[in-house]
Image 1 (tube, rainbow, N blue to C red):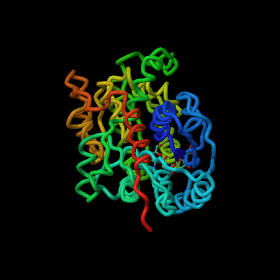
Image 2 (cartoon, helix red, strand yellow; image 1 turned 180 degrees about the vertical axis):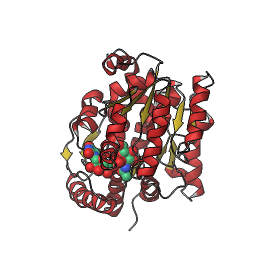
Image 3 (cartoon, rainbow, N blue to C red; image 1 turned 45 degrees about the vertical axis):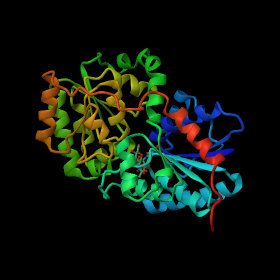
Length: 371
Ligand code: UD1
């Protein structure tokens, strides 16, 4: 059985790593890894391969950035050639990024079975590029591996047959639990210059939050207010750094005494910082889940979340971009009333083993394709 895994961006790497390890435990499995190169800076890509022990990609397309249409189009052109050559029994895509959708579409057009890991998540906000990617990927993939019951419900409501949906749990949490103790022993906090529990960790990179000067400046105002109360660490995504520069806001951010602007971090250093933070402010998807498992309050700087279980069960509060709402929520946490949650079902460190069994079981018994 030959699996071809497609990855492209930072949040894909921690999802594919445990799946590849779990499949490795099975006999008669061959795995090939294709990296589209959507993320290409060493600190956005290579460091994750090193930290997580992911094998070097068998195919590295080095496609880089671009507008959504042209970026996805270039990926499809190259992936069509690569899949035709590699002839996979199954293409595996993870998450909701342009590389995910490109891989799923090409597999579907070539009538190759495709599995989507982290299927069924919906924000119901089609202005998010990732929402389009989620819908399209789930529509064309054959096997939908989900991490929460709400994802199953979304898929069933869209008419996906029950037999295609497999609730396996959260593979990204497998990676977190595997590396947590090791990450905590790193000297990350010392090198950043913060003490455990005495800082907030912030990440900001969504186009809707950073591509508009007024919105980005308002977040900067809020960060300025927060850093007067406790240190804030902000690893800067390349998109955000570029926008701060274009809007002439970078210097203002740089001179705030208690705002620590740092380069993007590798997996282990970022996990070390998350695990010891007082709270997290973020517009990331994955971080909402990681904070839930770590029991760290998370304030999500978006109007909605495609990961509602982190709110209903976990430590997440969706605060949007309203400065007053964010300040109120920060005030609650600093007063010792941060949200305490529990860990969602099947986010137990064994999701990738379940995923591997589903992948192999369904390939073995797969019906012959029509057409
Ligand atoms: C992508 C994903 C998003 C994910 C994020 C994680 C899509 C639609 N979006 O967004 O869901 O949360 O990755 O980071 O797939 N850049 C660099 N160096 C890099 C990578 C990017 O400088 O290594 C620059 C690019 O030139 C571009 C910008 O950052 O201008 C954005 O990169 P892109 O891959 O288009 O999307 P992200 O915003 O990173």
